Image: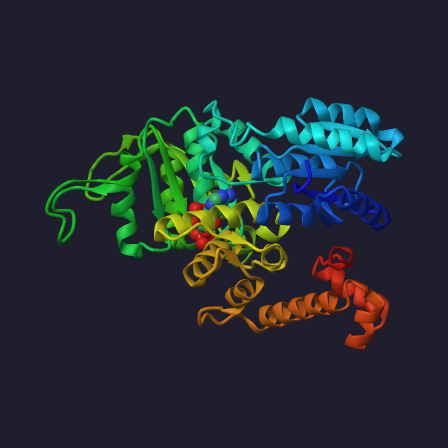
Length: 449
Ligand SMILES: Nc1ncnc2c1ncn2[C@@H]1O[C@H](COP(=O)(O)OP(=O)(O)OP(=O)(O)O)[C@@H](O)[C@H]1O
Ligand SMILES: [Mg+2]
């Protein structure tokens, strides 16, 4: 049984130390993590043979870690450590697929027996994944976080109705991907999904693009043309970047939505259309209404249900799964050998600010894949890719913020998470320093070795 690698997770450093010594003495290779999030990063980078985790932990608890880890490594066996008060939770966990649990305090013999059993039973289950096809609609959406699962759950529920949906969230969070999934989950799935980027179409062409035109209605209209509303008939029309739709056209769109009828340019009469409207914006439409750039009545038409995709920094537990997926995809495309992230490299990815969200993560990982020359991607390569803004200039406030965050991360690494020491180096008092860490959502504990 020895020679296997075990990832040990507990927020009690004393217990971590004790257990790892004991396991190493039995010939296991032991890696430790003091938080669920950090553990997830490790699993995303290396592939331990076994995960042993405390159930009750600050932040991501053992059960949440188990659920997230299961997506990264479906066949990874998990043993839970519990205190007396949490035995019912542990029993519940075994129903969900946790291999077994140990109640603290446990002796060395019990522990080794559980490990042996877990390791021997896990072999042969490699690559067992959900293959029932019920989740086809969300194909391509990778997630590992409770917030995303809740959003997807809401998406699936509202997909059944014809209610207009507004997806409002930051750039690169996956708005179009979600809109397509919503269509696939809806009864309209067999009809067309028609995307249109309202920001990309010149104002004078919007009407004919959306509603169509009759031959001869304007110079160049040498035959009848169907509009996108008609193309989407029976299906879903996706109005992307709706915040950029010119004010004058907003009135026309509103009329169509109210009447359920479109009238092509140059036609004398309209005809009814049956489309479901999903729109998306990265702008705050309520602020646009305040400023007089967006019609309030149209807003209420479009926003019967609002879906807000959390930014990537609000769901960092998704990063290992996403990063690994994009890396594998990039390597496959380039026909190069498989690559994996070193644990420190994955950690750097997990700590980055990700202002550009998943789109930025895709770009960073593709750049890394193109530049990597070794099977294991080192942290330095990730840092370089994260620093490289590819010529794009960011607002001063953002540059300042990024600098501050990176500075704090460097300090915490240098001092191994010792706040007193870090504050002293930065010439700030502890209270102030803690406030800074809070603002950047940095956890000193996760920098302790
Ligand atoms: N959960 C996810 N899993 C896998 N890939 C994702 C996920 N979310 C987004 N992506 C990928 O990230 C990129 C950006 O997604 P998408 O174009 O849907 O974002 P967006 O919110 O419309 O961005 P923008 O505001 O820049 O138009 C795409 O390549 C998409 O495939
Ligand atoms: Mg988009």
